[in-house]
Amino acid sequence: MNTSSSSIYRVGVVLYALVIGFFGINHFLNGTGFQNTVPSFIPGGIFWVYLTGAALIAAAISFLIGKLTRLAGLFLAVFLIIVVLTVHVPALMHTPGNPTVSIALTNLVKDTGLAAAALMIAGKGN
Image 1 (cartoon, rainbow, N blue to C red):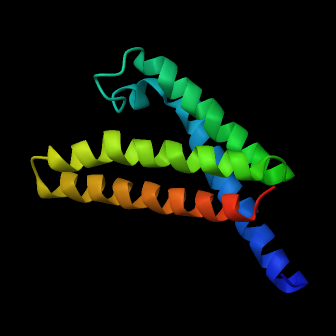
Image 2 (image 1 turned 180 degrees about the horizontal axis):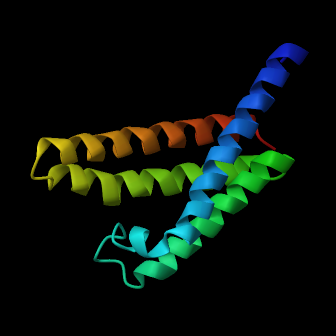
């Protein structure tokens, strides 16, 4: 990869890390709001909200400092796909009205895209 491509890639990774870090911080600021999104078959809802918030922040830090980025990217991608399958797909299937369907579909596509980006970072990571 040439210097220009490397610089563009690094800017993308930093921007992505800031987004992921924001989502992690948001889990702590709005924990009780996120608690309702934890599937009912998983006990200890608020624990998972805070744990995922910490994991998102850890992934963001990994991407920013360039350490363990492959591992962080893979774990983040797996986590996001699990969220898509356990939160967003069921929400899409159980939505009563069109506005809710749109929100559920938007969240599904957003987290799928974030998972794809995490895989791209993992593919170039150390």
